[in-house]
Image (cartoon, rainbow, N blue to C red; front, side):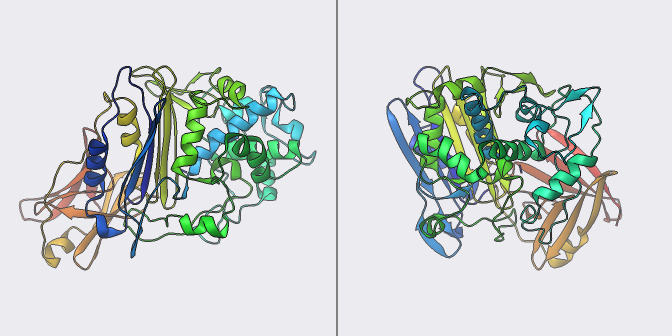
Length: 452
C-alpha cells in the first residue's frame, strides 16, 4: 500500500548525537517540498522527546479550504497499520492466547486449505516477518471501483485464494512484502479473539495507549478533521476501505496519536504494552536489501545505527514512522497525497541521511506544439513503460501501474517532477524528432526508447 499534499511529520529526537532540525529548518523543508501555501496542500511536522513535543505546520487542510493543519488532523496511514497488527500479535502471545509458532491453519475454518511446502506450515511469525511465501496481493482481486480497490474484497475470496495457491518458495526462506500476509494475520487474530479487527485493535492497543483519534470507522467529528487525499497530479481521490485485509492498511490516525505510539516504543511513557513492544524487536531477519532487516512488523535501517521504521500509502496518502531506541529519537510522517515523504523522516532521525531539500527550479512555458512532440509511450523493459500525455498547457507522465504525475519544464527538453526528486530529459535525433526519454533519479540515468 506503499507526495506532496497535506503531510504530517512527527519527530522524536534526542540531544545526544544528531540534532533535530529547528522549527525554521523544518518549515524550510516543507516550503521547498510543497511550494505555494495556497494550493490547499501542505505538511505538518511534530517533534517529541523527553523534553516535550512541538508541531510545525505548513499549508491548508485541502484545496479551497484554508483551515490549518495541526496534530489532530486525520490521515490514512496505510501500511503503518501492519506495525499495529504485529503489536497485537505480540500482546496476544504475552497473554498466552496464541504462539508465534502456531500455524495459521489452526485458526481458520476447516474448509480453508492453507498452502504448505515441504511439510512446513505458515506460522503467525512468518506472516509478521514478511517471509510466508504468500504474494503481495491475491490474484482474485477484481475491484468494481479501482479507486477503492480493497473495498469489495471479501473473506471468502481470501479463503478461496489460499485454498488453491501453491507456494513458489520455501516458507521463511526469503523476504517478500505481502499485504495479503499481514491482512491474513489481522484476520486470524480477530477470529481467535472472537471480535472484529477494529474492535480488537481498539481494545488491546489504541485504548491502552490513549490513541483516541486512531480508528478505521470515522466518527462525524473525525470526518471533519480528515485531510482529503490527492494523487500525484493533485487530483482528489477516494478514501480506501479495507475489510478482509484490514490488518494490512485500514487505520486512520493523527500526528498526536502517533506520537503517543512512538513515545511508548521509546519507553518515554510507561504503558501496559511495554513488554509486547520490546518483544517486537527481539526477532530480526534479512530482507535481501542492503542495510535493511525485518523484525516483527518493523523494518530496520542499519546504515547509521538501528532505525526502526515502516511506511505506508493508499490512493491519496503517504506515511512514515521511525525511531531510534538508543538515541531516543523517532519520527512519524503523514501525508494526504501520493508524494514521497520517507526522506523527511530519515533525515529527521539522522542528519547523515540526505536532507530532503528540492533544488530551486524555474518553470518555463512551452508551446503546445513542443509539448505535443513529447507525447507517446517510452519503453524501459518488457513490463515497464512511461506514457506521456498532454492536457492543454500541461505535460504528464504515467509509469506502468502508477499514478499520473505532472512534468514541469525548465528547458525546452528538460523537465522535473515535484512529487519526487527526479528529472526527465527528452532526446531528439538530428532531424529534431523525439526518440527517447531519459529518467534521472537516485543518481542513475535510465533511457527508454519512444515506441509510439
